[in-house]
Amino acid sequence: MEDKNMSKKLPKGFLWGGATADFQYEGGFNESGRGLLSHDYETDGSKEHPRHHTMKMPDGSIIEPKSSFILADSVPTEAEPVFLDDEYYPSHNAVDFYHHYKEDIKLMAGMGFNIFRFSVCWSRIFPTGEEAEPNAAGLKFYDDVINEMAKYNMEPLITICHDEMPMNLALKYNGWTSRKVIDAYVKYAKTLFEHFGNRCKYWLTFNEINAVRGFGPTGVRNSEGQDRYQADHNMFVASAKAVKLGHKLIPGSQFGTMFAMSGAYPATCKPEDMFHYLQEKRENWYFIDIMGRGYYPEYAAELLQRHNVKELHMEPEDAQILKEGQLDYIAFSYYRSNTTKAGDDWFNVGGDSNPYLKETPWGWPVDPLGLRYTMNEVYDRIQKPIFIVENGMGAVDKADENDYVEDDYRIDYLKDHLSAMADAINIDHVPCLGYTMWAPIDLVSLSTGEMKKRYGFVYVDMDDKGHGTLKRTPKKSYNWMKHIIETNGSALDE
Ligand code: BG6
Image (cartoon, rainbow, N blue to C red; front, side, top):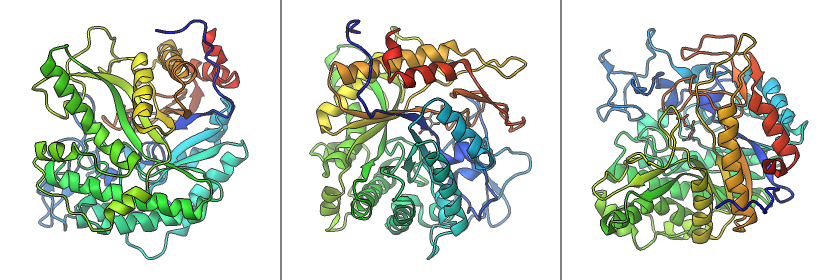
């Protein structure tokens, strides 16, 4: 499939960078007046022991979690969030970008990044989500970050909301099920546009809006059925309102939303498996179609019925809002591919293992060609530029006595994926704005809360319980990536 005669050199102006999320990277939990965030209650975990939330009830008892990411249905709005002494909550300090931002930005600049994707912590700007005025100290932190980046000609790609919300909004309104959260979000987005718009052109309204995490993107207690799809509708409206406002306030601004994309294959060529695959794909297209084209597709009725959704509450003006607030580009994360067959759960992420692919230690199939396939598929459908805003490999790194890591496996993974991306751009003519690798500096894993699932070009001395010096040390892949960027991809041909 790879065309050996076609150069991997990328078009001039291609954006090269890395991506992070505040609650996995930033820390600074008690600093600059930051309020409580939905992720602050998530413990650490592992593949075998899922992360969970802890909540104290008004009577003093502690609510036991239902599963990772999903807040127990029984949590009342008046629950009193409390932290337990014998639990570790990784978001509180993460890997402390809050105090290391100068050093980290310098390291990223050293690789030649011209863009850095980070998320603003909503509760650092509006601690409960409902204040009339933003928190000036919170804004100042991101001012400092963006100004530091400017010294190296690195532009920001800001994720307005990365799977999170102020805890107050999650508890009080059952997250995005309430339209009150739309207003809170638009006020927050407007604040960011007014404050950072003169220095930020690229924005993402949400991270992985299509992912299934009850307490993640939607903040709802019940992650399936009526509540989930109502929450999604409210997020579509919020995103569209933000896009329209952003275009008005920031001339030349470009808006995307980030979708979790995996390559997907029918497990066999049995017609029933193929039809199931079509329906499974629509679980994702639903989000991309509505936000990328500005209207609900015909198949939405069947999909919603399949998920026991009776009727979505929509205001009369919503259709017009969605039309006017379409995305400018389609951003996605790509880590792996999945298989699917008749009878599988709709959200059976992963499916059976694919005999043609190797897997990472966390069981994620490694499929570079799937990236080229996905880029083509998304562009064919929506016909808007794409932006790969997350891709990378979680691995167990063995550091030597100087904290140096020889991560040839990461280099292999990235080389294969970047080559597939270059082929999609150069051979298939898919317009692609850039590539931000997850995550340039080691940080806390979202799914497991571990540190040992490392992605970075830079090793951070910290273990799964937050112990360590936090010293940053470039890995072997650091200089490799630097060379790829300085040759704008040509070195992939070597
Ligand atoms: C994406 C998220 O789902 O994948 C990131 O946007 C996350 O927040 C990344 O960290 C990798 O997943 P994990 O679970 O390995 O951290």
